Length: 242
View 1 (cartoon, rainbow, N blue to C red):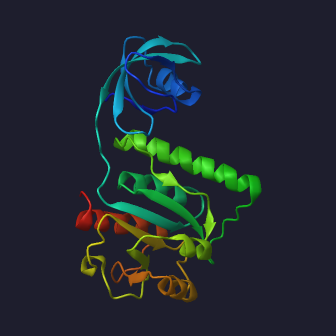
View 2: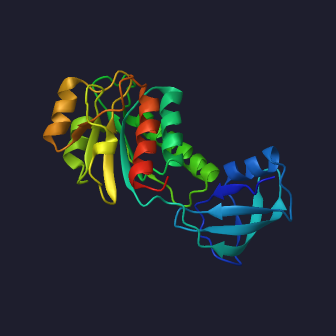
View 3: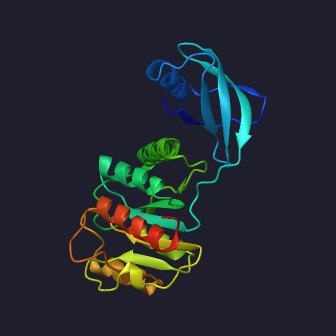
């Protein structure tokens, strides 16, 4: 069996004994049937990973001793900010999960004209926590040791005013310019993608007025979750580490 990887918010140091969070403990003990003496890999988002050995495995708690540290870096040299129009339910979860696997640096959930999900007050906070859990799980699966940042949901115009990247691209199905024809962005870029139904013409125009460049992904119309995966894959192939 592949050695399980777990995120923890604990401070990690060789020789230290720690108790893992309830969710991780439950998964390791009750799902994977891990027992005392077996090893796992821990990371806390600050870089690198630690081998740890299980000391005690109870029904609700799991204690491990940290054995050694490994300076492992699986981050892309291209820091992509994905400004993603919020889609409903599993579509957004899928987009976040695959974006993490494809090396995204930061995710900005954007409320645009065609966003049908309404997020206010407590519901907005709960949704942000849910997205954070999706990102943690994706990092555990794909081997990343640093967590991509996910911002709280933000209105499109507010985001356009905040985006400080020099290279900013907005997906437009009518654009003839392709990603392969864009200049090298250097170390960072922003990808702006609309929710279901895409961005309106007026929203794209406002993005262009704020320094974004229109790019297309070919002659076929892609779903929002497909567009994110395709665009990130191309960017990583052209300027990242794929």
